[in-house]
Length: 112
Image (tube, rainbow, N blue to C red; front, side, top):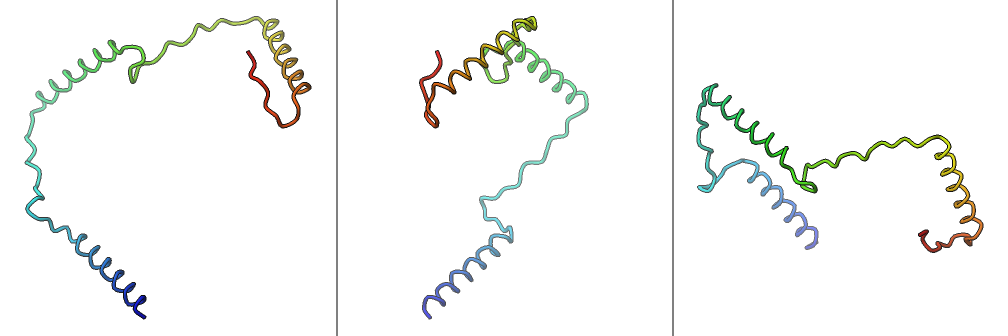
């Protein structure tokens, strides 16, 4: 009986606490933000142009490896179909040989 009464007491305390915090009443630590300053359209445009110039300068001077830097793509060297077929056949033969020599379910040494 004591256990049930204790459980009901905890549940009631939690419900009351949730309702009390949901009221939104703040103490002296809660402050309203200062009113926003009105800015003229010319000032907005000047600030936007300044930020745009800073951003484009930063984008041009990004060092390799820095966040946002993009590595250049490797040169697209097209291989002739004969080389592709030879490489494919070599890979297929290596795979077939590996399947034949490896016992089932075991991992062998890495290819060098």
